[in-house]
Length: 207
Image: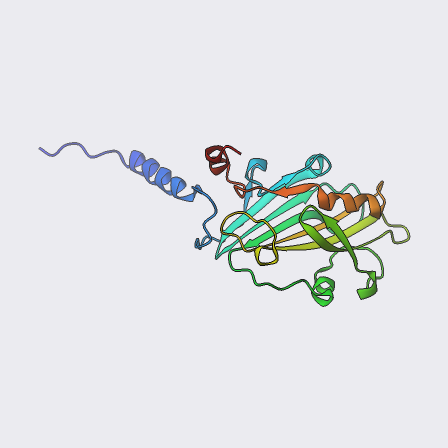
């Protein structure tokens, strides 16, 4: 007599558990990974550590990793009626090239309602990682707005986490109560997490 087969329900539960386990990321960022699905992640998986000004503004983080890149988008609170979303974005790559951001590339990326913008509107700021480009303004009837972009490259002497050659950080924020100069300080209110948002790696390394 054959032993009784496991019930079908138990087999389905086991199969679902195996599939779910395969979807959970393990280990540090693997630049050779090919999984490129956007997903919501908790704040402890942010590859950027946010300072005291940015943390209260954070609403959500989305993340995708693979193809030698990691991208994260930090959605920030927007208490204004300004068109568009406030955000801080990170894109890191394991195969970055030693090229600086040109004014044309920056102008093509500008997505903030900062009024009339041309190449003469671009300014250069500075934070702990070096220089960054930005435009800011307060158009008539609008809040203060800032759009900034910074490119960090190992080949240009910037200390980046292991295995990462280049990181682009983009900030777009409008605030009804702040001046454009006040918003500029937000570009100095984050740092790159050496564990790239992996809590397991952070604990193992003593971060």
